[in-house]
Length: 114
Length: 115
Image (cartoon, rainbow over all chains, first blue to last red; front, side, top):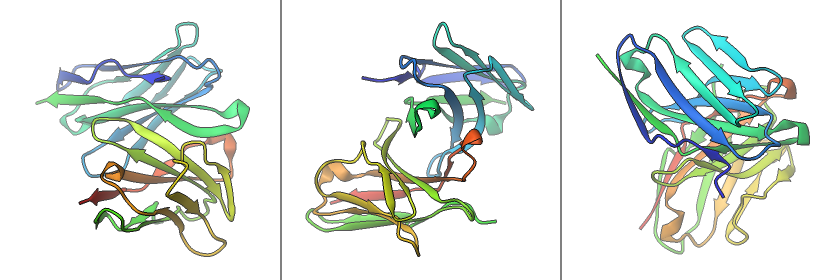
């Protein structure tokens, strides 16, 4: 049972345009969401997070939107840069239940073309 | 300020041998998590430890796998009698005491290959 789903295995965008990565979840107990970026042969690097009490969080070029009723979140990268090319993982946890383990999606490979 | 350190980066074992993976958390962090990533998959939670305590081992296989985080020294993930299906990337993450901003920071991983 996959509780966090990233339905697009890959995404290709032009440099300077917007990248939108999507994530859906099924567990209504999840109350904290994170996005990680991962390069080959490296560990995941934290990008941005959002608590379920918010619907938007912004940090520089990265914005995460949360739609609790739809159990959907998205990561927007504007403008996209070639260095953003990596695998992006969505992750969720149930902090209210003191359940801090992260449940990850399978990832989306983003390619930003110069 | 060093990040999460994992060693070795690559580990090759023959079937039946033991594998020991080490993780030193970020300075000041006392929460350690282990995850496993199979090819083409996301990371899967294995175990969550604090110093000298296992908090959540719901993702650990029931046999051959064990983890510890002693009072002194790194956290160890131990796999006994490895099989080919254990081949994967194993990532360790750590977090600090402030649970209100519970971000887990990851190491570079140990890639285990079982021949």
